[in-house]
Length: 444
Image 1 (cartoon, one colour):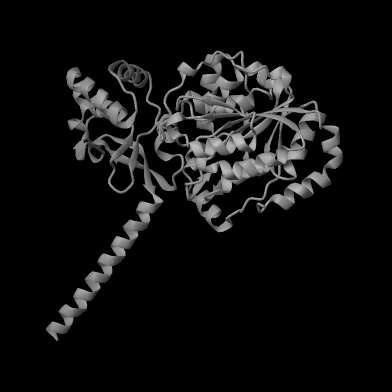
Image 2 (cartoon, rainbow, N blue to C red):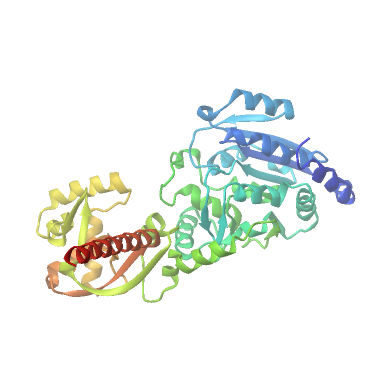
């Protein structure tokens, strides 16, 4: 018997009245089984649904499949349906693909589950710290624990305005940059969401089936999704992860959170809160490019300051070389060499995923000519003034005002780099002191 078997029995006894009341509730469970080695743990959570009538659908990636695990699932629940799908759109695309083929009016509740990765040792996100299995455990304990499963079903069956149930600490609001990205996708797809929407970080939840019936009408298809790849930009799947929860609030429904035990890691949390890069989003002196922030800064710990630097002090790193601004491809474009610049744009997009083009540069130049807003300042590394963002802006200013012109610049230093810098300085200082002592002894 598993460690949580007694919790399963205790939950059945403690909530026996609620179970009897909701016994006829029809439930659909859709599980995206990407990490198949998570099945033994998930199986223990699904066992808590035994008092109810539920159907189980498994979506999986054929290249990731394990025949032994698939056989275990069939043994656990023989009527399980399996859907092979392409590795696109994370867990969101397979879920939307499956529910589009189901008559959701046959069900009262739909559980959306997936195998949240547990290999990451540490992450600071949404003002919380998660280690190893913390996130996975929170997601499942919030809706499928021995006690929480009955509270979840009872809440959705008996509270007309509760549209979704999930772990309380994972029902969150996005920071500004992600709200902006999501709002752009929502507008394009004509899906109404509130500005300060809520969603479930990790996207494991239980929802009224009738609400998901509306999702089937959204103009989204499997072909719209890109192959799943870590480190990609904010994609359609990331936006839908939020919209699939957020769309219910404008309809008058709420997201209900169930408390789950989660370690606070107080000392580490204070350090991360003190140095989190998210501080930049609330600094009125700075307007930072959201795309750049999402890709390069979001999860970082930094110190930063605003300095006034001459343009001659600012440099650009390209393919292992440190270049002065007048030697960059962007400045060469301003000198009339568009061929070299277009080749650079193609190579830069291949390396970094950031799209820049002649058309986009012309739009930037037009906006700068209409008035230079100094809060949209370039971003450089604090230790050597090498550009991280704002190369084109700097080149235009150099062309217009010359190398001695000073501009406000956001200087950012990564905390880990700062620590190593201090260690190196301390080592050099101690080495110098030792040599100095030896030299003095020789002279004596």
